[in-house]
Every structure is written in C-alpha cells, then in structure tokens.
Length: 388
Ligand code: NZQ
Ligand code: ZN
Image 1 (cartoon, helix red, strand yellow):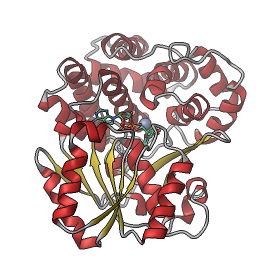
Image 2 (tube, helix red, strand yellow; image 1 turned 60 degrees about the vertical axis):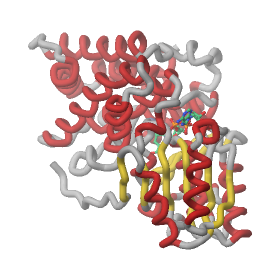
Image 3 (spheres, helix red, strand yellow; image 1 turned 90 degrees about the vertical axis):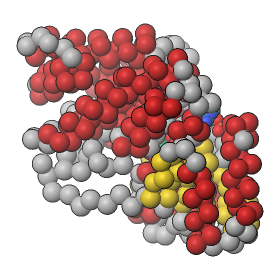
C-alpha cells in the first residue's frame, strides 16, 4: 500500500427526510443559485420542497435550469453570468451527476475572471469556488461526494474532466426516495457507472492493498444484488439506498487511497460521449468487457487479478486462473447485457460510423498513461473496433 493523505470533506446527510438540512445554507449567505436539469425535479415535487425551505429561511433563489445530460460549457457560462450579475453566495444542485458537475464549475467560474472553459481544461486554475451544495436524485457518478466535474464542449467536440479540492460539495443530501422515479434505463446505466468506477479502482498494480480490494468487491456484489431489484421494483428502499451509497463510495477516494491507478475505460467513454452524446454508463458497459478481454490477452498480471475478481465477486470456483478470468468476463457481460439489458455494443448505442476512431484513440490513449495496463493509441483503436 502506498502513502496517502485522507480528506473527504463533504458532509453527507443520508436517508429519508434529510432535506430539512438545507436550512444550513443560511450559514453561507442569503442568495443561492439553484441548478437543475430538464424537469424531473418539478415532476417529483422536490423543486417545490426546496423552494419552500429557501423561503422559510429567507434565502433568495436564482435559477439555472435545463442542464443537459453530458452538460455543456455554454450552460455553465450562463450560470456563471447569473452568479456574477446577481451577487450569488452559493450554488445548490438538485439532480444527477450532470446537474452537479455543471453546478461545480459554475461555482468555480463565479470566482474566476476569465472564461469557465479554462477551468475545465486546466484544473490548476481552480483556486476558489463558491460553496457547493447538492441534493442527489440519481445514483451513478458519485459527484455528490467527489472533487470531479465533467463538462462537454460540443463545438470542438470535447468532453473533459476537471478536479480540484474546491469542487468537493460542502454538503450533500442523499435521500434514496428521490431516486424512486429514475427510469429502468437510467438505473441500469447508473449501476454500470458505479461498477465501472469500482472496477477502475480495483484493477491497480499496487500490491497488498487488500482492504481497498475488499471494499471494491463488497461494492460490486452490492450493485449486482440490488441493481436488478431497483429495476424490478423502483420503490424498494433498501435497493435504492444501497445503490446510492455504493455510488458515493465508488469514487470519493476511499477505494483509491493507498492504491492509486489512472482510470482507463473512462477516457475512452468520454470520447464516445464527446462525439456521439451517449449515456455515460451505457458507454462504459459496452467498453468494460472489451477492455478486460484485451488486457487479459496483452498484460500478464491481468490474469491473476481477473481470476480474483471472478472468485471474490462472481463466486467462480475454478482454480485455473486463465479459466476463472474468462468466466469472470462472461459473468460481467451476462449481468450488463442480459440482467440489466444495457446496450451490448456501439451499434446498439446508435454509433454506426467508424470515422472518428483515429481521433478518439489519439486523445483517449493520453488519458491512459499510468493505467493498470498503459494503452497506446493502437491498443485503444483495437478496443474501439472490437466494441462495434
Ligand atoms: O435533467 P432531468 O430532468 O433531471 O432528468 C435526468 C436526465 O435526463 C434524469 N433524472 C435524474 N434524476 C432523476 C431523473 N429522472 C427521473 N427521476 C429522477 N430522480 O436522468 C437523466 C440523466 O441524468 P444525468 O445527470 O445526466 O445522469 P448521471 O448522474 O449519470 O450523470 C452523467 C454525467 O456525469 C459525468 C458523466 O460523464 C455525465 O456527463 N460523470 C461525472 C463524474 C464525476 N463528477 O465524478 C464521474 C463519472 O465517471 C462521469 O464521467
Ligand atoms: Zn463514470
């Protein structure tokens, strides 16, 4: 295990009825920017509940609505401009990862005197942010408890993750009942996303990080148990609660402290989202098994690690590592494509043309330096081609 500095500063209120803690915003000022997406919070009634609490505590509300899935830099710019012109004190995101990510960069952009895209492509420029608060409505990205935000500029096109300690939310409300209305499709995609975060952390070359590996295996088994239950019965509290906490733990640092590794499937998926605007978790579900097959064939340590994944997560009993590793990948495919009914390949994601492979591979390979198996541009091209 390597040395690390532990710091996860977000205060989390988890469970039913925790929304009342939004009253604490009054300690940070009296003007908030409420950020939300395309309207799910209005349909669920959460919007009205949030406004009522703001009114009760005399907090004035400005709104940034219509944040799109794979949030656009222009929406961030709109939010920054409201913050600056209205003298906003803090930002409150109510929604999924896209809404939270957008709110995070708005909070940073409000404290920066040039264009917000600078903060996306150069994390070092994030030196100050307005306080960030979140109410999570979709279990997936873990943005509610991490220092990351992912923003797209469709005009390039590009999709880039930025990270800074200032992007950690000050406080997040995690009430699983707010995810009851998430569709089967988004529940499946969210489950694949948090599993991908866990697997990205699990496949590290740091030896003897047993406690981190054990956490990963537990989170993966929990997702495998509860993902299908949440899809079959969207109002199953235990399923929604377990998925919600898995989503936060998968990326908040607890799995990677002492066992760092550069993520490799995510940079490839971000290229798919940049060019084709796909749903993040669906892109990951397509790419992850292909990536596993590729590393198994090209990187010797992968066999043992995938066999461990097979035995400890999927209950595979075969003692031959090569066989256990292949069986593990098959189990993962079966879970993603048959149990969760996620798209199996890029064609099912609606991607027909192969003309962008070269450009996508060029950028994604740069993001894979320091990964479990470092991928060259040629490696990434092969993986993308096999994903069709
Ligand atoms: O926009 P609304 O109307 O709210 O609808 C959303 C959206 O259409 C809907 N939704 C959310 N909560 C709902 C709901 N529908 C019904 N009931 C609810 N309770 O779900 C749709 C998708 O929402 P979105 O926020 O886009 O999904 P997700 O949470 O999966 O976020 C994906 C974004 O996060 C980035 C992804 O790349 C993508 O841009 N990521 C962020 C990370 C981070 N900050 O750490 C890490 C991840 O790896 C990821 O890259
Ligand atoms: Zn992700």
